[in-house]
Length: 220
Ligand code: SAH
Image: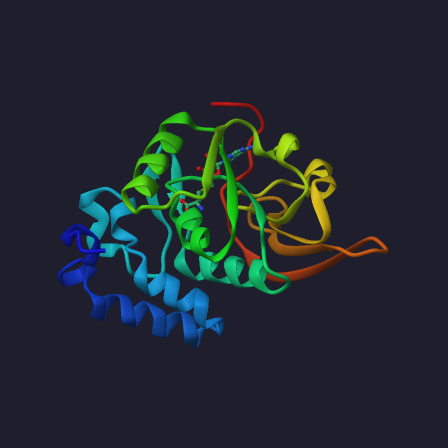
């Protein structure tokens, strides 16, 4: 990555990014592949220039259309949880947003299918990933709560917005051994869950208390 926009200066420089990585470590993120990827991927290019100087703070920030780019800690935690199993070939992501989480994950898996309900966000995400030279992602505008049937089953599914209850359709699209990382519950009471499809059925674990934008039905 030689483009000067990507390497960053001042508040987007390598030193600022290293501080973020230290913070993620302090919060318990241990997967070095994930930490390295977050260190090397510029987050500031995913947001408006006016907010770029805050890109390496561990906070969610607005990306337009009433949505936010996920907090780096959450991206790290979800990616770590998703990678905590056999190598991932087919991954489904629901809630592309600005594409940051997609870009973190892309080099760590074989292929990502990502769904976003807001077309304007999807267009921008597509452009950014292209600029970054990421080519193993397929995009779709639509309602991700019904998954992507023609590409199922998936080894991993990552959901970046919170349904009240985990959609059955997403569970149905998990391959045996596949993992679904999803926040669920009403606002103020959401939990990040990890569901794994075993030979005998679904195993369900709570990873953390979290706060996500709601998963909305229909195309906006
Ligand atoms: N990981 C993203 C976070 C985006 S926030 C990032 O780093 O930018 C969650 C996204 O989920 C929003 O863009 C929202 O529009 C989208 N979303 C909400 N409900 C959805 C649905 N049913 N299907 C697809 N996308 C949805």
